[in-house]
Image (cartoon, rainbow, N blue to C red; front, side, top):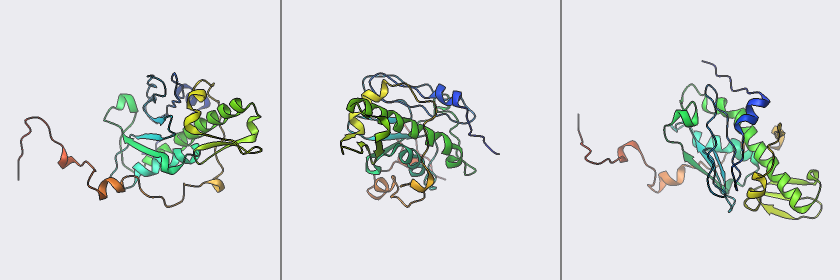
Length: 223
């Protein structure tokens, strides 16, 4: 079955929003209305993208990891357009909640294909807002600033702001209607071999598998 992940500008704007004190962006998921953005305390994230004051970027993955590498591939898409530092990227698995996260099925090689456009747009929109926030703080033309590796840089002066220093200001800005995507020739992560985010937990025995689940009064059976 082919899933159409295209969305109109109006649809994208409807699901991208800001929450008080922090930068929060919602992603549109095919075949389901986008999950509502959660508002919380300062710098609190929504269910999809978190950028905290330390500059850590956490992506919530709503697809199952079955060995295909989706828990690394999907964060790579966002990190690429966001211009995040890969070392600052973290991930969280979403709990089963289709009303909150939309279509959470995994199969048919659709995880990346079905998320490609919307995750790129979400990352690009966040990048645009961070750049605008930095330009306003410096009182310089926006065109003289660029994001790179977890920072916004003012090219003429060499001044820099880490993403974490811009989150609160960026959250107060209007969401751009059509943030430009990066040209494929400028990709730093996509198409490259990066360390999988799930390997350390597996190597050091921290990964939780089904056999590790323990519930009160749980019974065991063997066949």
